[in-house]
Image (cartoon, rainbow, N blue to C red; front, side, top):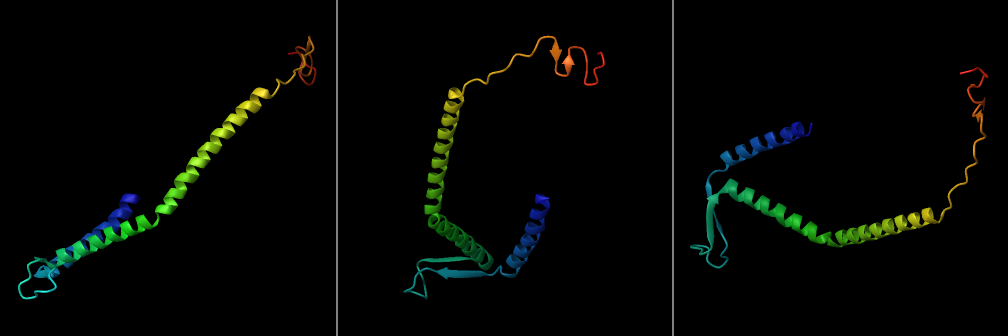
Length: 130
């Protein structure tokens, strides 16, 4: 089922991406020099679809990094709580072992000889001989 859902999403997305690339295959120049616009020294010429895909990928990476750094205190708290839970489990198991060692063995009464659970040995509830 998971492969089907992945294919259901990836195949149409791939088709849209290919159609976008074919429609936007002309070259553009991206300049990183704000002072000289006629002949920039820091420029890059590449197809428009590639530029847009690279910018989108960069946005995903930067956004993911920002979220990851923003949640660092939650991860730290989760690690601390996990360590406390492990310590509590270890302490509980030690206390249970101590309680089991301190508990006396239950006293069992000896069964009367010649008498079974339902009366004399060899008879059932209705006192029939077995």
